[in-house]
Image (tube, rainbow, N blue to C red; front, side, top):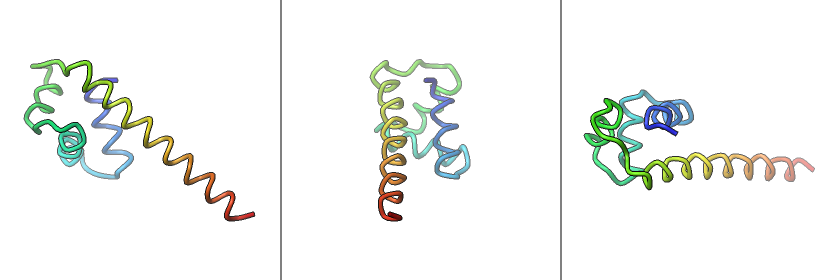
Length: 77
């Protein structure tokens, strides 16, 4: 997982512009938007814990999506 992949993921799943995805990433990761920009520009590498945090956010989103799908399937029966 790279910071760019995380920004792309946020932009796609939330249907927002990349600049808005950077703000969303900063909020979710509890960092400044300037730090996210530094990661994207290659000026600084994210702490391994922040990379793990990015991965966990994506995993949680996928799990929530799957739960909703299963709930919908149960409600149709």
